[in-house]
Length: 302
Length: 261
Image (cartoon, rainbow over all chains, first blue to last red; front, side, top):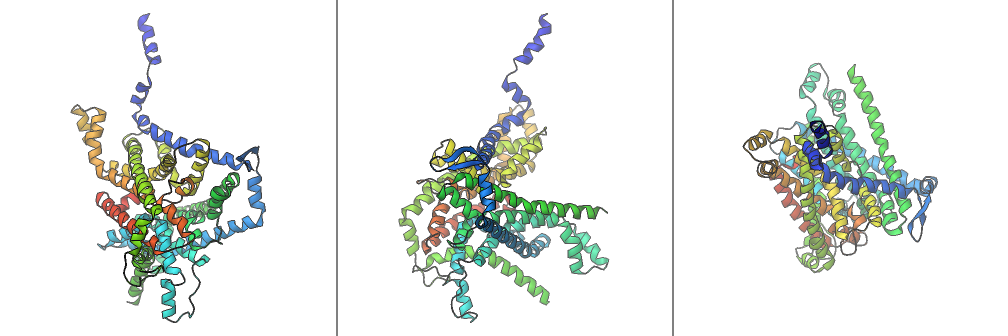
């Protein structure tokens, strides 16, 4: 009798310690997992529920469930205008960054130069130095008495200092520079995976350099193009610091609008809704690219 | 021949474009006047004195940003190491899910992390410093986990087996074999977390309180209304510090290894 019940009894008295001893990975990941759940996943859910509440001046987040924050944004031409100009800005920045970065990434992925390590170091340090320092550098470069204006006047291209700072051009230039490394590194890692013998084979078979690039290198590096473009698009659509400083007080982007709503106007329900609308529109290039990539991938299979 | 020349020119211009703002920001600090001029008209350390006398900047630099960045680096190391160990040494159901989860904050824009935490802290009260520490740990952890996993995968698990078969318990093995093996990778990941925390604005913008304004947020607030070379002096000190950290990381693990996407 006793020998029969003992195993069952043992199973019941297994402690949490025993359970984790069989699954050490759970014990290792438990605290970080809890950290993520409490401080990231739960706040994101909370943010969604704030976005579907009404705004109540005294308590900020009202008690009524509503979609009025989303409707207010999408129905108002003023806000739609900010959304459209932000998406346009992000498109210009990501396309320009791709065009500028691709040859550099190609060079860095193919070169056997001993300077390569240092060149990569030079690309990474600006990234680590942070946006605020670099944005200040652009103020010095683009201001009324800035370096660019000095050069333009010395060479006689303009007579009066040109107004560059506090324009969209300044924002575009600043964002491209700040975000370029995020484009270059995915491109390098994709291009490193492209087999160089394929390029050699294509040119042996009579393809010119442009043909090789168009039909071999670019299609095979598509994963890098996709992730670089998506990252740069997302980061520029949500940027706050660069548009706020280089665009001047009159420039409004989704980033500066959301920042203002959350920290100055204190309309949290509306601010959270605007942030979700931005997230939804940031997903557009992801879907676009995944359909393009899927089609290109399917085509290659034949 | 001309094509080669063009190619060279393009490479040089790209690096000038990428590095110009940082270089310009640093050298503008030597201006003797209030104008943000590059190249500077003359040489003076006036703006460094101005920086050291500006209590808002020195407080933000030392008592907030530097202190919090060190704490974030330590916490990121403490949380990142066990996760990376689980991911690289064990095969289990849900491993891919765990991996995706820990890399997911890179998918969530930093601004959204900041907003979500702002709303969370409005409901649950946390000390001002703790708010920023939590926010920065969230954005640093994925990169740290990735970097530590990479250095664990580069080390030989057989050494751990050997220690165990010689009678070491799991904790001893971990502390005396694994950690020394990947020490430089771990330190590099922690230093990277330090720089992420020190330079972040997008999260801190939503979480700073009156006495916990981080340096980048303080500089951002200043730049919205005016700009003088005092910012250049702040920038120069920050660039010097980050450059030093970057060189150490490069020595320990290679910068590229940390930032690989």
